Image 1 (cartoon, helix red, strand yellow):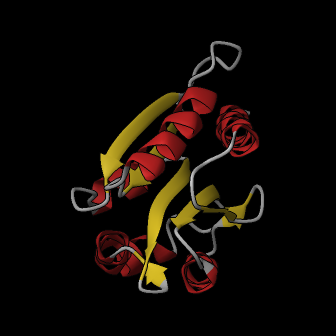
Image 2 (tube, rainbow, N blue to C red):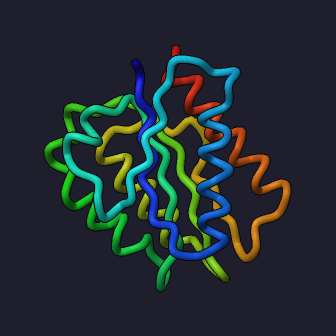
Length: 150
């Protein structure tokens, strides 16, 4: 069964809300046959990443960059996964209170190095998530699950 791996660092209520919307979309009953695995960024390992067919990334923007937890996950898996996961789809969301530019750029740079293919541009949410933000993230989760299922 294809697996969608959600790597997340959800330390705030807003980031948790974004994570929940992504997972709801990825787990929609309309898309069958995809396992949605949720692994905190500090717990992710090489087997998790190698065993997945696609990825959803959720992180806050901390001091203009991705969370240290997500950076640690990438540091751990980057070289073992670089060639083995090339061409796999991903989606990502970054939450910030004022600016997410550096965090978005970091995700784009790292995933480009891994050879992952975005199903949509990295989503940036500033401040409290709106209904439109949550709907867009539900759609992102569903799109990625459908991509992995096909």
